[in-house]
Image 1 (spheres, rainbow over the protein chains, first blue to last red):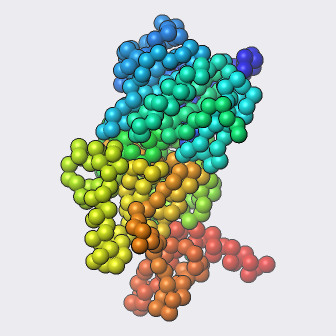
Image 2 (image 1 turned 120 degrees about the vertical axis):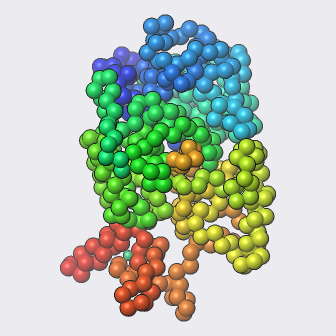
Image 3 (image 1 turned 180 degrees about the horizontal axis):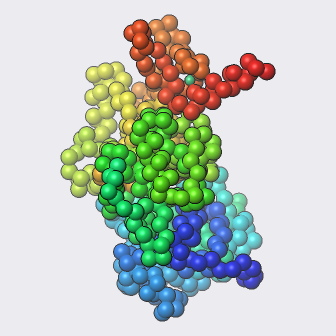
Length: 190
Length: 298
Ligand SMILES: [Zn+2]
């Protein structure tokens, strides 16, 4: 969805705005598959709401302008060590992120993938049928601009629960969360 | 409460929610991992709060990291909005979170912080329940080493806990745990669901509302996400049972105030020394009484 934003960009660096962004994220994680709208460009807005100097970020494709890094405060680390990773979802995954350990599964990374557009139901190119915690009856969402290998790789990474990763798919205005507990079946609305 | 505490002011003069923004962000990141790994005790760095631990600092840190100006907060302790603890916590949030509304009505609240009870009224998707937890780890009764408990949790190895429960069954003919009944979340982690009665345990199962549990002393946050399986640990031959509120004749005891026969009851001893029963959820009880008097007026 690339239509022009009509409202003024929210100040994503203000604590009150970050609290609201966090609550949208909380809804997204609580009810995976529910597409949340964001008052600013979602991938950056969510990073601003989550990061500080205590956390690590990897941006291997240099998607972030250099000027943003000081504002995010996060430590810049290699992909496989990062708690948060920002990536272009249209490109196939290259490496295995941190999946956490049995004793510390929370160290599994959070991957923010930029995609072209997110759709409720099956209007987009890649259909994802979702079930699991937070989903009362299985739902289908669809995505344009997400390389199908991402879902295959992710399903592999979460196959040994409690190890795994969280995916947050972000288009220009919306985002959706896919925690490691969400079962994702590719291609299905059946 | 510590009267000497001064509220921190941010650079921009923004002060809301008592905790500094870094502390909130840490708790928020921890909450998201806790939801992603249902029932897992996610560690965080607990900040000092201007009240002793045991007064619900774990729950309060969750509440302060969640809350915004649009929220309406309800605080209950032992089922009551009016207990000293509940009043203190509510006043603290009102003082530190200008613009937040407070309520005693369960259905009006967007955030509910509680100790010992889940409200009788069914929660909705628009609500978040925060439970204060004194002892987060269900395995502590069988394994003193936290490092070993972490491995057992990771492997979902609860055989020793089950043996312990079974010893209870053999000795007392039923599982005697009245509170903190070990409950398995999403088929993996077993949690200590805070000191809620068995009565409330089934309400964690497939709850429309997110349930977050916070232990301030142990510095752990864990979650029961919405629409998630929550099963009390049981054996094939012994079913899980909630508290039995029947008298010697097998009649369900009614609340002495509102007459409800479907709520969780507290046992009280009146001035004459007789045992009486009353709803533990005081707001529920008052609403039942209002409904009855409205019906009488009509
Ligand atoms: Zn009553």
